[in-house]
Length: 466
Image (cartoon, rainbow, N blue to C red; front, top):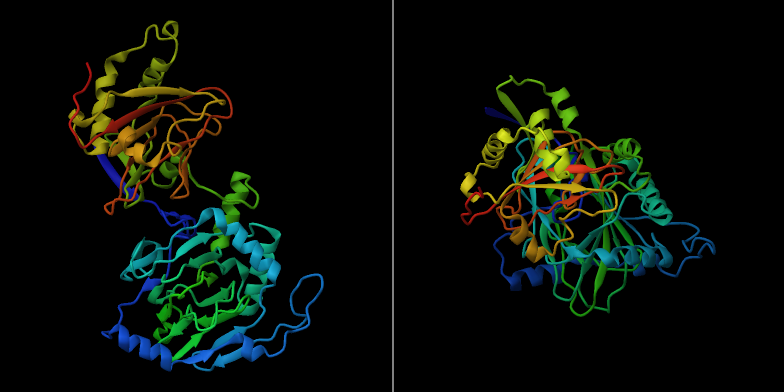
């Protein structure tokens, strides 16, 4: 049997590998060869732009919204144009956004790589970096009425369709935490950054544009907007910037990125199909649809679809025939229902699992067959992180043995779920090359039994049970 591999494209807006974000972050720019002392001198010499000084007296507020009756935008730099809007958010909106983020702070990541395909989901890889030490939390699009109101106000300010606005990216900087020189990406025509709190005077935390010689003082509710491109797909390196570390206080902010793609069209289509309303959690892969879209295999070939490169995740429709899946599934049923089952195919099944895992049978645990009812929760993501690899090894071959309503196999950190289809295998590595863990979570069926087989492969040698 020959394995033929194709790659499928998951919308970048839905990929959340480890960072919980939209799959693309700002790309780090190598710093020029300057010492810390020289950098400090450049920061000191930069023009300090303070929204409080520009705005002057406190504006008259609308008693219902808590926002100024008139929002004033200041052009603080002509070329490239940078716009500052004091009081863009009300105090209640600021408090609401921070409260939404509190349960979900994780270490921030940066996108690194080289543009080759003009597809940032392929060209950039998100990784933690000592050059970005803050914490982040992604909100969902239109997560609440307040979030939706802020999103539409941002779209009006930017003069762009709200469908191009990525999910709001909350950030938190503790004293000493920073984000070194970076560009927000040629795939993001505009950025709006909103400060969510004040810092003590002269406490740092400014947003510094080294090529322009300007820095912005954090002021609660203030928005700063700039363009990242000279033309479609062409970086404007003048807008390279960095988040300077606060000295003593916590700094809160929110990155509001406008993408060149209408990312929300992906979300809306998937939400409608899955009946999930506003909340979109998982991109669903249907193995039957994969085969329909790419049927180019012969009877002696098995088609494998690469879903994620690192850690590697593959979907293999039809790894087992219907008769093989039914025979294996019968092992989870009472003894009286196994009568007449031909078990001679079990050796071939294990050989196929070894082949798609790319590891010898000597490294495979005894094959497991399991059943799950609607009142059960399958193993997976709920296993303690330190115990996941102990339980599931270095590579997993998971096979659906029947078809049920619901019962998907989910990968929460990727935002992906696979629909159960008889004989379909899902194969994944439990760690990336950088050591980040990829774990799964099964979903119980809506009714009936979900039958599955599990092949666990380990780096240390195991002997196949007789």
